Amino acid sequence: MKKLIIVFLVLISVSFDSQKPEAYDTGEWFKFRIHYGIVTAGYATLEVKEAIRDNKKVYHAIGKGYTTGMSRWFFSVDDTYESYFDKVTNKPYQFVRKIDEGGYTKNQEGFFNQDKNQVLLKDYKEKTEKTYNVTEDVQDILSTFYFLRNHPKINSLKINEFIEVDMFFDNEITKFKLKYIGKEDLKTKFGTIPSMVFKPLVQSGRVFKEEESLTVWISNDDNKLPIRIKASLAVGSLKADLEGFKGLKNPFVIKVQN
Image 1: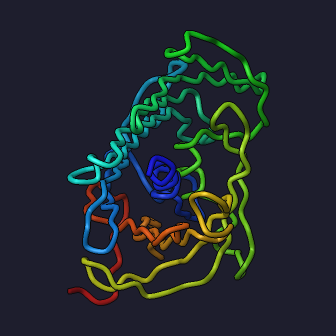
Image 2: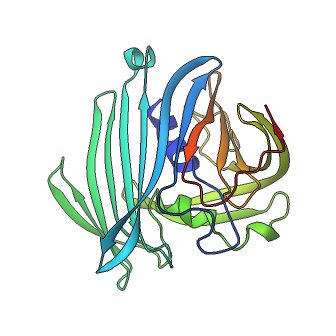
């Protein structure tokens, strides 16, 4: 369950637009319900606020994931991820990772030096500090989401083409890869929504059946809002559906309303 919450926090906002930044703005908020069939396992939320870093206004994204109800009896998850990133370049200044997953905890904060391509990682639980060399265009786990929402390649992607992003996570750089599948009209609680479909590549093994076990549906409008995430697991499958939203920058396009 803990790996799924992390994946949903990564994917919940993986959406795109051709301008910088036009898909979102300060005040955006949305919530996902994570469920096995009709049984709710937990929720995940993402919110965009404003903060000051290096004497200028930046975006402050806050992502939270948590189990609820009977799911907490089997495995309790309470995760918070934060990112402070530039409004123009989307490069991150700072990230926060506070997690409690069935008693497994982390309390970390990272500070990016964009001139030196380094990140200073402070681990408050382990009481350690370490500097890592990173690539020039590296993102953290949350800034990745918003970077992708305005990625310039989205309108020119062909079926089965990829977008790759260098992401600093778990003390190393990970290649976050997305495969474009096509378009689909998706039936939801809000109505039928024109959507773009992607498959993020994940590591097959204990949690996921295979590399393409995740599917993500993104609204095909100017918001590029995440609508649904489906995970085929080693045992069964799990879905996350958009539960609520507010503060969208653009009109939300619904083809057929319920």
